[in-house]
Amino acid sequence: MVFGMSVPMTLLGLLEREPSHGYDLKRDYDTFFSRGKPLPFGQVYATLSRLVRDGKIVVGEVEPGVGPERKRYVITERGATEVESWLTEPVEAEPNLQTVLFTKVVLALMLGRPAEEYLDIQRATHLRRMKELTEIKRAGNLVDTMLADHGLFHLEADLHWIDTTAARLDALAKEVRG
Amino acid sequence: MTAVEARDVKLSFGETPALRGASVAVEPGEIVAVMGPSGSGKSTLLHCLAGILVPDAGEIHFDGHRIDTLSEHRRSVLRRDRFGFVFQSGQLVPELTAEENVALPLLLNGVKRAAALKEARPWFERLDLAGLERRRSGELSGGQAQRVALARGLVARPGALFADEPTGALDSLTGEQVMDLLVSSAREQGTTVVLVTHDARVAAYADRQVIVRDGKVNALVSA
Ligand SMILES: Nc1ncnc2c1ncn2[C@@H]1O[C@H](COP(=O)(O)OP(=O)(O)OP(=O)(O)O)[C@@H](O)[C@H]1O
Ligand SMILES: [Mg+2]
Image (cartoon, rainbow over the protein chains, first blue to last red):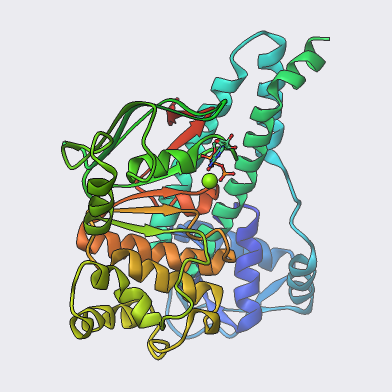
């Protein structure tokens, strides 16, 4: 659910909460953000060294012993500022599906292909996914519910678009065929 | 054997064709959501399946028996004994308390008052309504009233529950609570459910969705 770009920010955010070890960061990440796709240790440490290199975190006192898990990471002023601005910046409201589906629908109409069928297939796919997410919601905890709801509301918006477009196909066909 | 089935059902209101050969088959214990545009014939189909309307052509079956050929009297007995209903809103009897409303189907079936109320009461705990037993419908919120209506629809352990936009008057969180309870209660007692809704989030609680368009039922097509 949390995409590649967000891993450094999420780890940085966890460190903003309190200084922590790589192992604990991974555990917290997996608990709250990974949604069944654990973050590999390699990626945790690679990300942490990049954050150190960029001056967003520093290595605090190293506890006696060997191995990377002895290192305690502390966020810097710069890192904290970055977390702050990332949090306040809105996520791009990307109407992704519509763009792809829109292209498909218009092309289908131009080519005299069965646009309505494509929309029906998309509707079925959406409803099936909504059912899966609803099952997750009914079985899961509040964190699962919130994530599932996020997906459900987006899929619902797409469905509204699909239904409205299906209802307008004839008019749309006239327009794109000229 | 299917629990509830329409076979090529046609029905017109005067000149207006509402159903033009609608077919749908629901398995025992299955929860099916009927979706589709406004005016496509969803409510009409539900009323045919529930033996409220009689089609002009086609057949309606319940539990292996054809019901559209039964007399009006026998259909009304069937509805009372075997079916439960939940509609959008405003369906509680305002003069009765919430627990009397829940007990109503049992009272109509000839169960004695004390026994009927005894049967009705556990539903208040189950549907998170404890303490509201003595309220009248005017003293309940929309979501509470709808849960009372749900309890009333299920209290007689009907073979089939017919619901038309049961969450239509509720906000989405309250609507989902009602659906969650509807699904778990129906599963618990093995009740077959046919649910009309235009809300995809509500339909997602069902085992299966069908779409009514221009008086016909489309199964969902897959890629
Ligand atoms: N009692 C009636 N008398 C005349 N026409 C009716 C009656 N009930 C329904 N119709 C017509 O039959 C068609 C199907 O109506 P129906 O109520 O089944 O639609 P619906 O899919 O439930 O719509 P909605 O989503 O708006 O509730 C519509 O054209 C409607 O105007
Ligand atoms: Mg209707």
